[in-house]
Length: 188
Image (cartoon, rainbow, N blue to C red):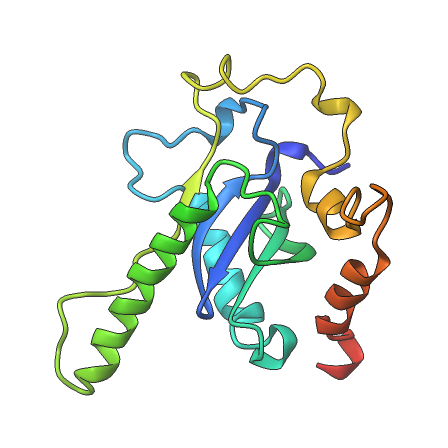
């Protein structure tokens, strides 16, 4: 019994988790709203800790610097990887857009660079916690799309290359290229 509200898309840039989006951008879930006392959503902490412990520098043997990961957080606050996706417009950015994600990634990279250049010296900057975006009460009326349940996810359709060849049909090389970048669990 997976609850759709606990599915999230994570954006990784230069091996850092930079952003997290609610996986279903047309649904409002009141329990995902940030309380007045919290500066960082508890779900952000759970996903970030999981990422640092099990995924960071480990996915694809650390050879993939930018990618997207879908996760599920269960009722015991355990995080499960659902899927890995390619970084870029072939994958739906959900509540973010790709220009914005690139800007966030570059800012985080610049902070990492400053920290690295100063070696053992103290630096005021630290890598920020990723931003978690969820549908807010103000957005719930704006994001509803009554036809969305009749469509395939855009990241899957793009990955499958639907409509990308000259006759508008399936282009298998796109999916094959993606699969060649994936690492089998037995090879990790």
